[in-house]
Length: 434
Image 1 (tube, rainbow, N blue to C red):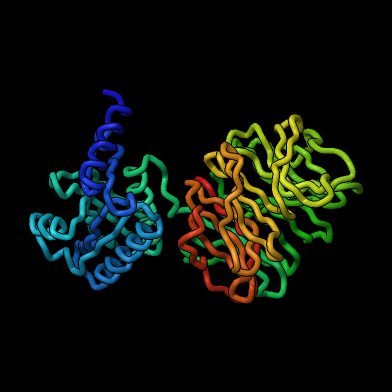
Image 2 (image 1 turned 180 degrees about the horizontal axis):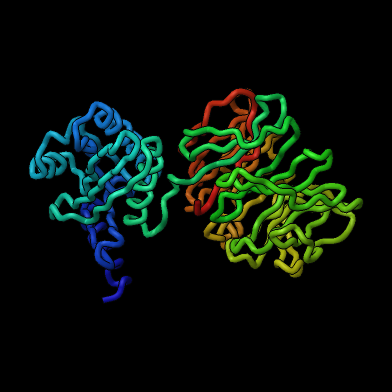
């Protein structure tokens, strides 16, 4: 029977049982575990303690920290209703099944923590179906003790993949600009606000960082040589190089999905227009011409189209064109627009628009040709950037009285501050596929 048949069966059962019946099925030797539950379409998942194998004091402390990290990841994913039990590793497995079934949990995550030679960490993880008491998935992850948060993120992302078929976002990072040193420098932080790092120490103006897809490389504009030049920084190798130092403006850019080309705004002594460059900075083609300011380009997920901002209508508006500059058309909006960025699924464009006196975050639904407002009455909200699963947006806002980075769902709910920093923070960029 095909998948459509199963989907129809699920819909019928959910209607009959008022969305309280749990349906699960595994594909390709438990590669994907689909679970639909009646609470806000989220699966109910139980999280046990990770058992300290050797009983060391360090293992016991790390077990708690590891579970807390994984619990936070599962909650932030917004795929699950998460239940936890303190010290549940003292129960045998049969008792655990009974315990979690009483809590209405459908799936249980449990595991073990082992520290080897004081520095190496081995984490075992198991995923059980509570009703059938069957093992769905198990694996082991290893790394340094200091990398425990990253290992928890990896486990979360694998659990998300097994429930949804898509990669989770817990291993992703967000780059942004901060001025706490009285200069604008680039910082990077994990998606949950941990492991904040300063990447540049130039005592210069650095602006508008952008991640290359699936890469530890960040491209940005810097006044390091007293001209707004494009640089690329490889954070894994801690190396950077100048990419475009053409006299005049070399402004924020966007890589194509295959990373072979990028689009940037270059002024070359005249009006700022869009150019196509290869990944070494060589100009391949001029895409726009005229006495206009064309900025903020972003590739579509297919790599066939580019969205950007232009003032050719007399004020900054959103335009889309093919990657060769043809088929130019304008999206209908009401206010001054900025920083459009294509969703990973290709059906929406997030952008900033000045409306009612402040800048706010909006979505343009391309199939429906409809504008959706996400922020309102919270001062200025700018520079949206998508998570790789297309379910969250990071942005800069001065709602607290100074510019900081926030994350929200694409329905505008669940807003949280990313990280506490000194100074002000601007222009976030969310990594994809790291």
